[in-house]
Image (cartoon, rainbow, N blue to C red; front, side, top):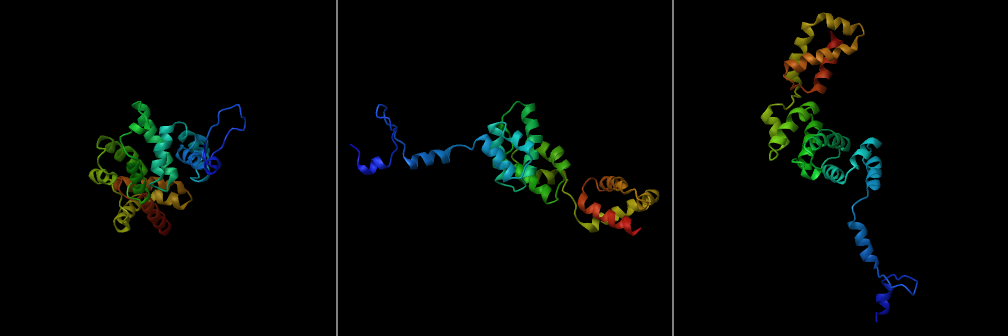
Length: 220
């Protein structure tokens, strides 16, 4: 016979003809805590907590392995949208190409978070990261993103003193284009940017270069 305390600790089916199923509250709570979040719960979490578009949330919760990988990346970066873009873009493309699941992906969530950090810090551009750094990392998964970026010599230059001379040379070389800009054709700044990036071999920080170009064009 069970003690009164033990009986109070359990729930029984009220029907006396049925065998009682004993379920303690602590045990029930432990099971709830150990259960993985349901796709619907993750979907709502991504929209409300991570502030992701509904489309992203749907894609990321479409398969358990993708959702789990994304969750691990998000533990290491607060740029949830960038994490979403990487998982839905380059990572899913690679998995599809080689018929792999996310848990078979050769790069750890920490490496993807590191790439996102390098982009956010202005050390590399997304284009360079996705087309060159990511590709090389897949060949050498044991290396860090920073090591690969340094090896490829693609770390962006954010030093105004080194970018300014390039900007000034480009402006001097295209006086007619400068006139077009002054006459209201502001979109032509993309041509100047293209020249700056080409002459800096893609290493000029686009944000810094754009700021310097805009300032110098207004001063001419």
